[in-house]
Each structure stands twice: as structure tokens, then as C-alpha cells.
Length: 70
Image 1 (cartoon, rainbow, N blue to C red):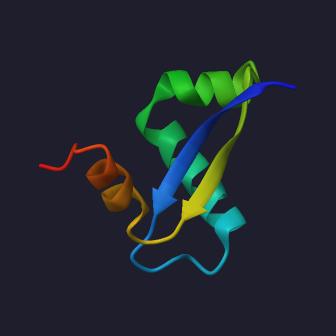
Image 2 (cartoon, one colour):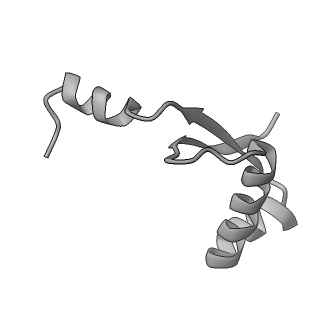
């Protein structure tokens, strides 16, 4: 199994299709970062990004609980 970038994302409006969102994220990362594109598509060192959708307020609550706001 190869590694992959993992994203934890809190949406204001969650996309209807999380898999499609991950595909678009993958394409856009490849457009702005040639190294990512090469590792993802040419050498196939890394796999498709993994997206974890979390409820609104997750990051706020986490930082608040650790006194890390502001």
C-alpha cells in the first residue's frame, strides 16, 4: 500500500459527492505543484488524496479545548 495525503476538512456547505471532491482536489494539487503531479501520476509513489469530512465547529472546538484560539 502506498501513502497518500490526508485532508481533514470542515465545510460550510458539504459537497454532494465527496469522492468527486477528492478527484478535483487531486487535479488542482497537480496543477499547482509539479512535484505532486509527478509523484502522483508519473512515479505513482503516492495515492489518491484521502478526505475526512468533519462537522462544522470541529476545529474551533478543538483549538478552544487546547486554549489555542486567536
